[in-house]
Amino acid sequence: MADRKLTVLLAGFGGPEDLDQVPEFVESVLGRVPPDHVIPAALQRYRAIGGGSPLPATTRRQAALLEEELSRRGVAADVHVGMLHARPTIDDTAQQIASNGDEQVVVISLAPYRCEVSTDAYEEAVRRAFDGSGVALRFTPDWNAHPGYVETLAGMLSDSLSPAPTGTKVIFSAHSLPMRMIEQGDPYADQLAETASEVARLLGLDDWRLAYQSVSAAAREPWLGPSVEETMKELARDGATSVLVDPIGFIADHVETLYDNDIEHRAEAEAMGLEFHRCRCLNEHPGLIRSLADLLDFTGG
Image 1 (cartoon, rainbow, N blue to C red):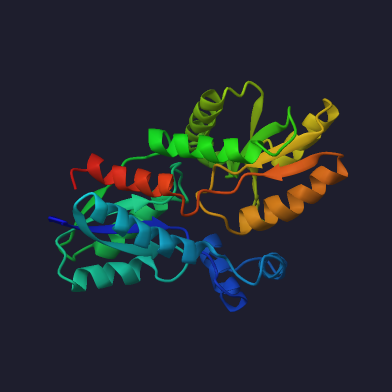
Image 2 (cartoon, helix red, strand yellow; image 1 turned 180 degrees about the vertical axis):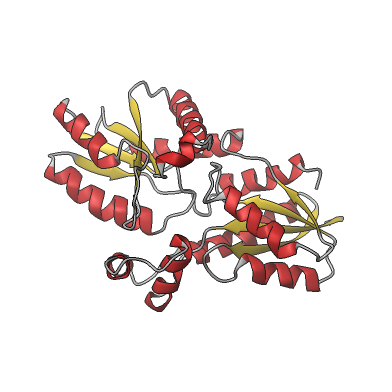
């Protein structure tokens, strides 16, 4: 029987669940009216993966599964979802929590790797949304190196490599960022390299790459590289015949994996003569859910 009460907020990025939501979503992400070519390109990408992003629904299922996992650990919990660029927004969820009379909320960023546009932005939005409400906030620490998370990534990659040809080259990938963020001290790239290195160590991988993807169509400055495309070209020139992209930068499949990896990168790889494989994201994997539950222990929740 659960003997404690806990209020949890999963803070995530969000995505458009249908095509009608795409313009508002893109404008929210960019923080400005996008150039004319951006919305049609985004609509084309979402049409190609079924007409919307599965990310918000996956996030809601993660919340429900986390409630169940906490209950198994003897913790009665209400796990809420608040998204930066989709509904329910962080503001909407904060209002709901405050109206419930909850005195404290533990906030988990659904981005394992801290950066200005994910965890930093989520936490800022949460603080702003709860300002003046009287609700105390506690934020879990960065969790890119959490052992359970890393072991779950390694297990998923091992399963994906099993049907691939011997000698398949592994490219760990993540969303690119403007270089200025890294130069200003953002830990994102270092945390990604730490996680990739540990996953590779657990699997005994000696030859792997870390690359970046999904540069914004509205980009106006240099972004972090090398790109997945550049890395595949290098591997093909060096004689590789098979490649596996593991998008460890994302915990759930969405347009960046379902379109950028599965459609664009696959086509590019095949044009280079590379057999293409892709590791699925963790999505609702029990290992991910257990790792999120572990984070709450770190806060004394």
